[in-house]
Image 1 (cartoon, rainbow, N blue to C red):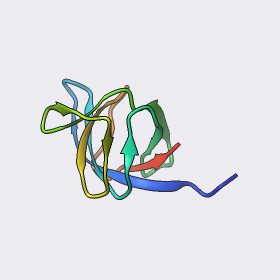
Image 2: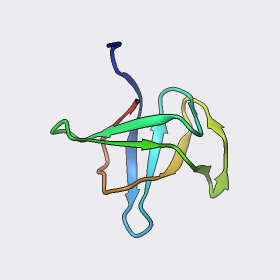
Image 3: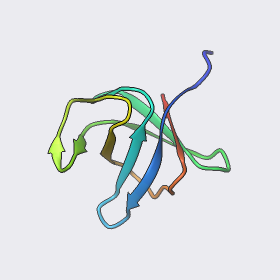
Length: 84
């Protein structure tokens, strides 16, 4: 299996609406699968069905962007995001 590709890190989590803000190190497109891992190695897998920058829907984001992604469960700042 290929080595995991880290694409970003969670910098904020809005628990009331279930949205993680991810600072990207690499590009990300809508429809891709990602895995968010906590410090214990536990992971949450999800498909990026919607992605926003400044409340505007986007189809792709580039390295350096901070994107909002709807997720299934809570995450913490500093959790790493991998292409999955």
